[in-house]
Image (cartoon, rainbow, N blue to C red; front, side):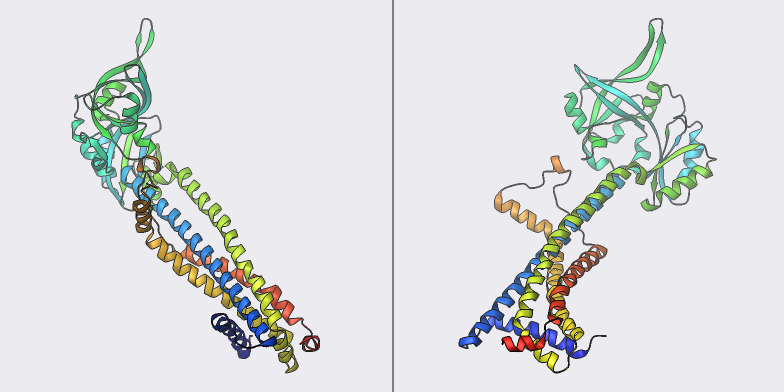
Length: 433
């Protein structure tokens, strides 16, 4: 265990170096040279603290931005897509109304809506694009996904049965060069058998709405129409493709959807948002880990500046070390004294960096907006980055991990100088002085 005087002397060394650095030394001769040396040591210590603080602050801000970005995307995905789906193994569910009623009242399910889904192709003049065709019932669909607030034109209620109207994603409409009121031709692979072969089924639709979400799945691929129109075009009869679910606890979606499939008698294909977007969130997590490793190297460089600080401190305190050894201090005590001094330098820098990083992360959006107005530059264009603000969320786990790694590096940086101080022969140090 560390003795009290070892911690006391280590703190006194750090305080004396700080005072010397602030006020200088007015003494002459060798005393003046010694004061200048102590001032230089204190300057190096201050630089080491500042570098460590900046490295820790940058790491906290970057990881907080990644956390905010992940949470923002997750919240948008959960508000726009179904939390889970139950579909037929053959792409169809017959006699679906009792199953829909059972799903809507299943424990943990907030709402359920039927849907028909199929791949297709849209043509407008000489332009064409592949689409994901989705037939919906507007009233039920609004309970599952919050799409109305993202409609730039039109309404889900326009998708009445027999109206043959269609809502397109904004990027898809721009690719086809169509606007609200224009006509497009929808072609599906399920065709009609004729004497000349199987011909794909096609139908003219009127564009009644434009959907702008900011997600590729919706803006570039989605084409929504009334479920009855989709069933007629795809020759589904009274069948549907599946049931979309809104779950009370999104994180419980895998468990709830499996329980519902079993309650319905099995024979269904189930999918939830954690599986559908697994690669997306996995890529964010991998990016966070890579950034943590890279920026930890910056913290390591700053922490290793403590080595030079402590080497200078050991040279400056050779006479004190010799006196302590003469008075009976063991090498282990000398080692502990300088470990305390180096650890305090690291702790001060880490605490200052943590405070600075948390303050920057909590006020990042205001700082970014201030820089944008000052420089007249838009850093985050919503058309490119999907969001115009830079969200940041500080997690306690990240904060503890960053401070722990930084403290470990700082402690490691003190070991060699402290070990060198413990091995100084006292007689030689006194004779040199």
